[in-house]
Length: 194
Image (cartoon, rainbow, N blue to C red):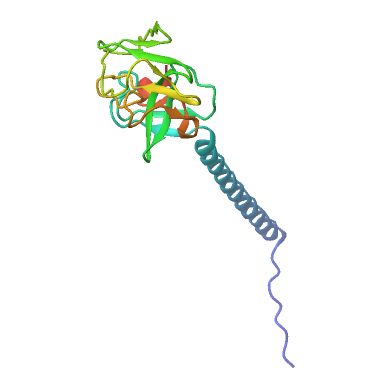
């Protein structure tokens, strides 16, 4: 008869070390999984917020200078209740344009040859302009803003194509992306947008 070989039985210290290694590995895997789940959830929430409530936009062109310049990155907030002076982003021909609200539905807009803008016969105080200009305008003034629309203009009036041109016209609520509230780039100009 053959003798059965008896395998070496590990010592208690070896077994405790192996148990500790297995527990550590399980804990490490759980931490990695938890971290990944958290990152995926945060990314999904950030994407939803950026898409649904706070779109992030980049400026192309200079129609809003000196307030905003080419390359600025801005955060907008979706919602209603726009007021004269607010800066909004809106869709036009598969592009997003950024302009300043000048007049609200039912307001009368007038403009003289020097670029002075009057809303309801009151001259607008526009400290955000570097210079006034009549610009690209084919409207007959005085002009009444239609119901449920906004009259918008760029801050660099000489080059801005805006509600003064019938090609763009007044902006309807369903075109509006949101109100521009914050600049995130360049870092030197980070902060609220006026």
